[in-house]
Image (cartoon, rainbow, N blue to C red; front, side, top):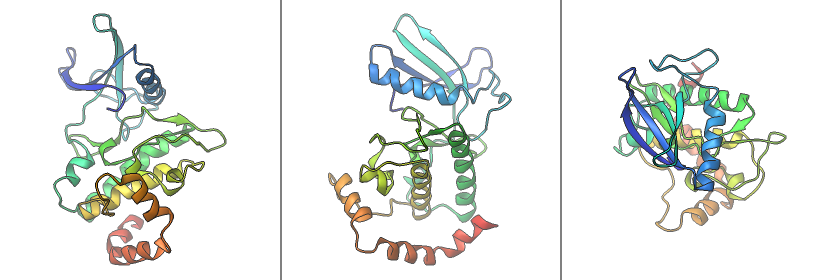
Amino acid sequence: GASGVVDKKIDAVSLELVAVKQVALNDAEAVKSIVAELNILKGNLANEGGHQLEGSIRNLVALYGCYFDRGTNQLCLVMEYCEGGSLQDLIDTGEPLSQENLVTIARDAFTGLWFIHAHGKIHRDIKPGNLLIDRIGRVKVADFGLAREVDNLQAETFAGTTTYMSPERLKGEPYSSAADVWGVGLSLLTAALGRFPIDVPEGQGYWFLYRALCEAEDPGRQIDRWLEAHREHLNAFGD
């Protein structure tokens, strides 16, 4: 994770695999990120057997608990372990995902986003690596270290992974929960193609994306062509 080291461990009570995120308390930025993560996950608790508690949702990774390790001066978050890896792992195979899988991923990811946005927060780092997959193929939004509450439904801080930033964020303009929706959409497009849809030269990430998404003469035409080519896939979302 961006805010700490994550290890796979076995819970001594349930004997289930869990993910433990460890954050050094002498790292101010890491502590800030873990507080942001806890502010999201405290509303998505599960017990030691992995059973979701009332009011929680299955499309965010669940929090089982947290503890302080005096020996290492670290705060440790015990969370659900997703055995299926991430959407990025599937994309890295180079094989486009099926229409059925894309529909399932979209449904699950947007359900997770709905929960976050309904609580007045935005994720700010939606990307394939933060869309995890559990043992039954359910997608869960993860890594909330950059999540923030929004004032008047907008935020301005520049944070997150440049590759999956929305155009208004690349331009440094105020943004809203719609920026998270962009991240899911671009992640789905990447999964549908089996690769990132824009060929970005090495070392030119930010400025190349800025020109491609914010300064192109008519980027809408490129989108229209893609929509037409993938209309059969997209129609499934309305079924």
